[in-house]
Image (cartoon, rainbow, N blue to C red):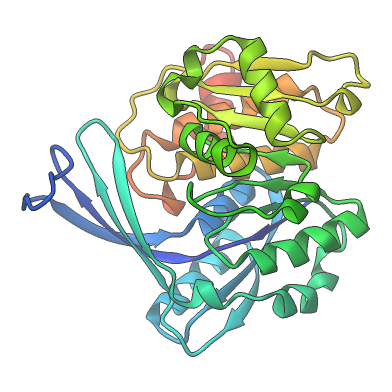
Length: 327
């Protein structure tokens, strides 16, 4: 087992409809329904655990069947829950997935909105031994700030996944962030919000490395930015201070060919696997760490669902590392 990863974030009960195509405004379509666990935080915690990390998850839950689902699943996965219990419905999400795997999502925060800095500070003793802390913004930013401040004091590497896309990131949180992991839309929106730059998200993957590197340096001058580009893989940009190993300032890692049926949670799979890879080997080559995470995320798209679609480390080895595995 690797050193620990701490995840701060949300748990949702997902309500998912699979349809041939996403509905137009005012349109009603027939589809197949299923329900299961999700929330960016829980997805990432499951991904980190299945990728091999000792994982602890700080969250807020209600006192309802959704909360019991979270606790039972975490126990089954071997995730240590650092949960605040509140008199509020556990978070929910409505998800539509089309025949190509694209999705649209509406989130009802519920208890997630009650996670606070006091609770995170109160469980800080459970951060002992952790090497990486990962957070998103489906919970209040003050809770994330408290966690990252504690991580900085303890020398824990921080990863901020600035999602959802319209979430505000205060300057003080950027200053506590070692790795930022936006997708194309999130990157574009944060550049506009934080830097006043208008960048078309749909053309990001086609930009030159030099152009993307410049944009990344604007967003997070002192940290590493990893932009996830869907089927095109990822682009990473490092500051000068992070290149003592002589590695490149920026690099791309391509995604492997997979038979994607549902992209829900793929970004969370990447983030959880990235956290686990960094925790397992802080001195590992960045390209190797990113390849590990990209492969993990790609495999997650071959299953339906969010948290439970996360592959296990054994599946990653069988698919990509064992002799005779397909590329």
